[in-house]
Image (cartoon, rainbow, N blue to C red; front, top):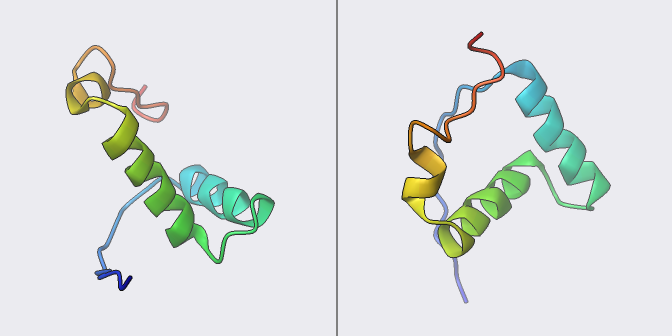
Length: 64
């Protein structure tokens, strides 16, 4: 089955990028892009968008 991937630009905090890269290494993934796609697929399949993005659930460890 062919998969159609597209390039996007994301702006993340340095520690978030490091965490993604660390997960890729730890789980033998080809790169941090694959780690991110796994996170997104999990959110799509297992979570309700309102749960993730509601104001009461937004999390920003960097916003102070």
